Image 1 (cartoon, rainbow, N blue to C red):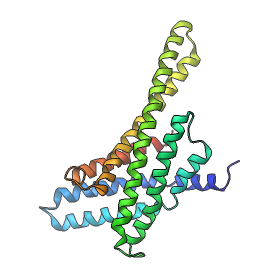
Image 2: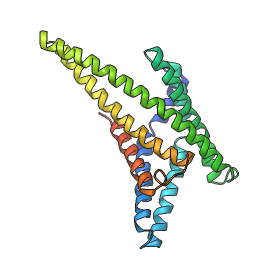
Image 3: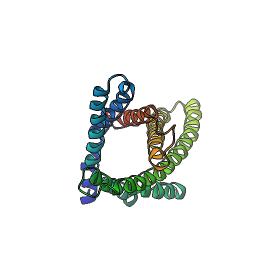
Length: 227
């Protein structure tokens, strides 16, 4: 039976779809703003306002999302000791990200002192990037284990023609696609986080941020789209 935390996490997860849609708006408008800034400044300003509004809206949607990481650790952090350690580190980083993201949102909309925004942004991005590194490592480990299992199943299916082995192989391949989408999204979000932690010409360029944001959003669409 699901308890209160489980039910709350399921409820919050239902907003993932709208979050990915608004994230698409946010980063498409960023790219359009960059493209027309020099030639059509009035239009560029409108797209900039759309970008900012979308970003703030997404922060509101994510209220309470730090509980997702807590619940993942509480319910089953990993199948092996190594994956358990990675899960603790990854989810701890993500919890820091979502928790301090609340204060960043409140400071940007004027509820808290606007001077806090930069500090909250740095702490949130630091937790985010820390978590993504370990999520990526865990996904690669699981994909490697899946490949090894798949090879064994292929050999087994050739020897005895087992339909169960073929079905298991299809499931492993489908899971690998989902994990590759997760890696793509996490790498893209890591680039965005690095732009906050250590500003540099590459990560902070509008094109880099725009493409990274869209990769993250569309990989998320693929993973969360109902089958």
